[in-house]
Length: 422
Image (cartoon, rainbow, N blue to C red; front, side, top):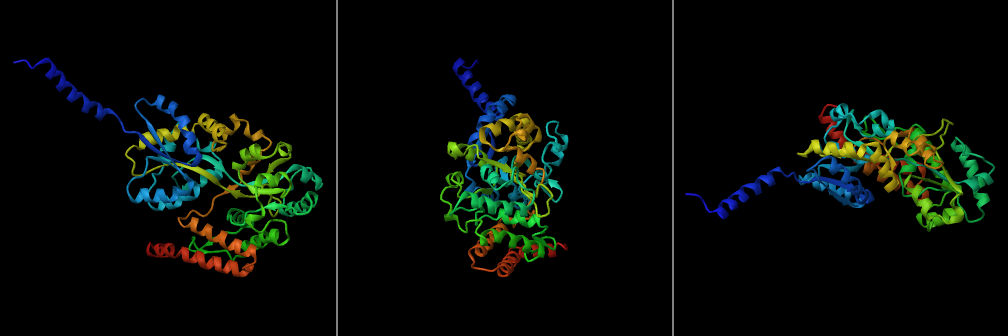
């Protein structure tokens, strides 16, 4: 007996619907941080066009909440397939076993050439010789300065040494007039102090990162030099001394600012018209004249969750976002400096009068110690640096307390290394 036509059609539909659901792949989950999470969506239609049936769902996460959210997601087994992480977070996520090693995929990739990345930035993505992240965009810190006030100090170009810069700052401060400062070094930031420590040859940690090494002669010399900016009245001693960075820079309240590439766009947008042609950037000087001096390897990388069941799809997304053309477009949309040197050349950034200083500085960057505890150690450096700036502690007392606190942070690391026979 033949089934009624409408019944047969219904059976076919019941069979067909589950089949369609089996063929459809769920969206690839991508967590991106801050403004990058808003902008990256503009790059994804082309990726999805190249990969029919593959969709990407981007979740934007504020930087302020990202670290805690990542750890919570790992503990709860809810990690995305691809995620953006700050370089200093990599050691912690690697120690948890949260990230997939990428060396084999990099070696097979025709689109990815490690020689196209800044060596110091690429090295920041290696933990114990294994690559866990692909640099997405880069940053580092150098000097933003008032060109007119440097000229008023009698210099046609930035000096290559810190001694030369200090002498110039004294004259720049005098040229700016009463009530001004020479340099803005935000007292709550750890980065300037760590940069100086690295330039002076400090290791920061000792005995395979088991203990702090901040009382070493090298770091003590860097710390002393750093504090001299405040003790000589060249740098404001607190955050409240500068009400608005851009307006105060424009009016000469300070002449030099140690900051990063995010301020290239901010200076261009926020400075008054009269000051827009009165500033430039310069790589960091060094204590001994070797130019430029070292700075920090910063930025963000793309990583793949070890627990992802979509690792091939995830790698396809990472490769796509790492393409020089996508890097150049991402720079145009965000102002984030590209991680690939070919993207820099395509956008003529090395020849840009302001971005070009970052091109040179990025050839001379170093990463912070690659241990999971670094974020806590960095907070301790900022805390005791600020205490010394305020005069609440002397140099020796601050460094002794810093070593003591860091040794406490590293107590678990020592225990684990001892149990492992290391």
